[in-house]
Length: 361
Image 1 (spheres, rainbow, N blue to C red):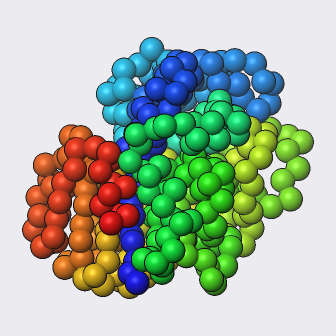
Image 2 (cartoon, rainbow, N blue to C red):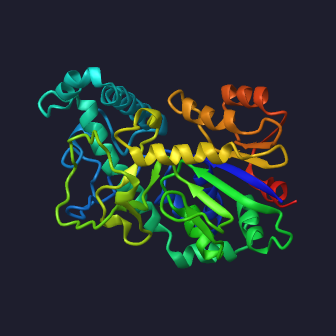
Image 3 (cartoon, one colour):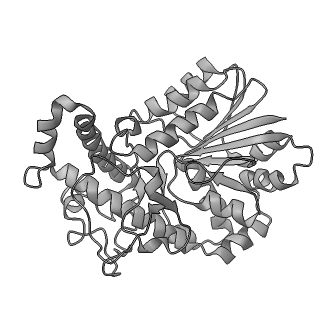
């Protein structure tokens, strides 16, 4: 028996939606995970349920910085990276006791940067956006797609797991940086048993999912939901994972949760996002258990400069002689170079079409 260690980025979700579009061609008019502001004017805030979340009324700082539904994907990504880069710098103050005075000055509501206010709005916006996207595809629709004659390579692997009569794998780990819960929903429909790190025990479970950047399903315990607003007071102490719970239903009622935005440097958030620090450590520990006989798959990772420290942390803990497959139609040259220099059995695939055969055989 052996292990499979699978790292998923936004490219996995894009790939899923591309194949789902062949089943329901209207989905591309309702979901866009490449341009996160594209449908912002269609999204409703939890406080009044009227379209127009991305507006000066609801997100004045994001709007003032240029966030528009009409932005191109490149414009949206650039703006989000600017906001998060400023937030990453701010959280360095949180981790340095000597900078307490500067931190408090920056956090003051009158002095706080427009970018830090936009960060607070972005957190709530992303929670709401991906919760809305999740509701677009109903359980029945997803089930019918999984029953269809889809050529999606990942589906072939997912369907293989419950019928692995030879027990080829004794452990399959998914480290996913996606907020959406389509992976979990798919596994549930296919009756594939799994556990979520930090929330459920891994004892006796072949599949473990680790989400170091959080999930729309990570929500506060005992959530009342009686007063909705954007909290501009940045949280220094953070929420320990013990104060969060897993929820898969009616996620659009939450105006807060536990997610780290795209380009967020989780290594700087040890004190402000302790739940993320714990999950990141779990992912690293599981990576160190991989041997040269195991399978590693990397799918749809961007390798932005702010992501590199976290991705590199996983890569250097993996066995360099294990089988390594990288799935990306347009692989970043720098990441391709890194993988080539580390892994002796490195294979690059332009699509997920072969992944079923790679992992099933």
